[in-house]
Figure 1: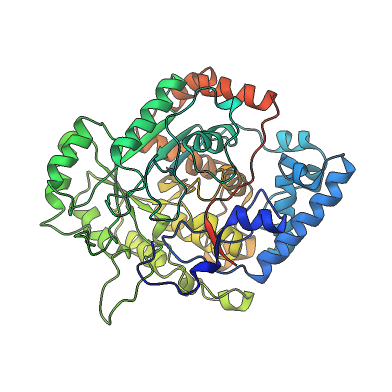
Figure 2: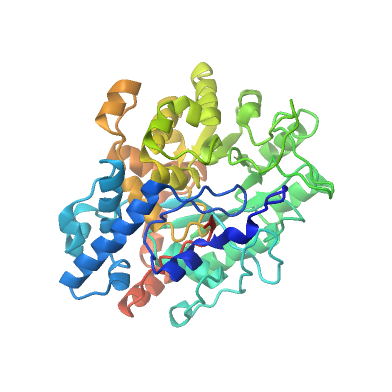
Length: 487
């Protein structure tokens, strides 16, 4: 959503369309993608180097084991090649071994699949909607015979959402999110809840949760919130404080005592007291001097301290890509300058130890930084873990705009803050226990999911059965990234 006119809009292209044109499909994005919430940065020289190296390594190693470059990149060895390329260009940020490039069994030995994976930020679009964000229209309803359906390339269908999230990744549970806006209405709360209910009923287990997108500009705000809580039984709330347009939808602050505090009092009574809010990734607009940016998390401290019974989840961790044109190494010397809003929020948490009800979510922020400059990703994770603790960080991917969540799962598993950065900035190493918490255990606790019981159910549910059949029949990841890039 770009309220300002973009002169070069004709230069935007979906990432997988660009990859098809140039024959450079990759398991890891080699350029920042956007769902049009923000302007994507141009591909950096380092990302171009990674892209070319991935293709060359895939060609060489695929030939050795009798696979084409494209087919090789759909294997776990192809994923390993991508991380080898990242290390070659950016430095040693990822734990990957050369043996993984030729032997898929090495991957299974090195990376046992024993984490509980909960992706708290996923999206799709409902059937029959226009494309105000440039997204493709989704098909509905879910087809149980998914294994026999080959989704059209690039279609963000509901079937394809299930394929990318549950069949092509290790995600156990996913939360569907959205925006409370008639103008930006790619999917409304009733459709989101229907998707959740359909998947859970088909699976025979709790595989999906749904947000209740809500905003004070909605007619009969509190009545609609009560309907979502008591009738639709949403699992949490989603705020988008930066929405603004000419149709009566306006931005607001979370700590507005007149508009929002009555809502907080109500949701405590209803027992749905987790509020997720988009902070960071500000809308593209021209601000007048002194005009506030409502995507900035300056309102979090007060509302968190005033309402300790609430769980407040900061989507995107307040990340603001302050200068999307910076790329060279020497431009990233000051981590605080590059992470201004995140750093401020971390400082609020350090200065206010009682803000234990605030959680940081990684959707798009992790994906953006880890492929653009892992050093900045290390600063980001180092700062938020230092300030909030590893038990207050949630894994989200903003899929399926970024493609299947699997590459981000793999990236977080393998990622480490370099020792020299730990020593210089006081960051702690990210332990395996930390990663398990971030990948799913923290969110499970927040959403009151019994991990042990849920894993027992998932082990024998229909979704797992579908996945087994899908893999037996040769199902492979698409390596599509559906968001927009600039050429």
